[in-house]
Length: 283
Image (cartoon, rainbow, N blue to C red):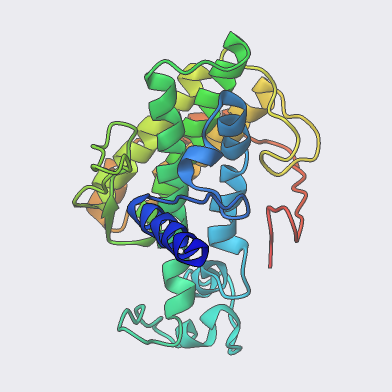
């Protein structure tokens, strides 16, 4: 009789467990809610996103840098590194975008990873727009300026390199699961316009910002507000000048603004410290 009771108790326990929803959180593979749970968590996450974007361009042996400098006649090589040999003929051949092409991995990395960093910082901006505050108004300004900067360069480089992309903003609608939906594809001119708008917002938020912590970008020490503004304006000059693909688009560029940004940007050697573990990496 006792044995029968024990068996019944075990069976009852199994049935009860089967009726429950058991959720186990893995700290080694955290979900969004864990990574962005508190202002401190959100700020630490934000501080990784420039390096994440930078890795999309330079962080692996195969990247678009080598292709681009051969296609633009800045370099010549018959080596397969970065698929330079596939672009070395005269006249320069077009990019092969067929599925399975030998350079496919090199070509798609910036599209996916830069879109990811744009989405990530847009999530931070959404939280701030909803009222989240950091430890001081100076940190609020810094984090907003930095998030808009990363969104700008992420969208801007996608616009320069690809035909079309989603325009990623903090206002994107959320799914039932609370994650943002990607919008329809827009052409490179429209994507670049949003990128430049993000950089404008970055500069507008910069006055009064606190210093960037070491490691947020490509420096091991803190970066001052004045240094950060120079970096943003240099990127804005590059993006505004680099997106035009036809004579008509080149004529439409506001070259006075390009010159003004370039002159107010980085005008001396700017040391970039790379790190194979924490980034930014440079293969």
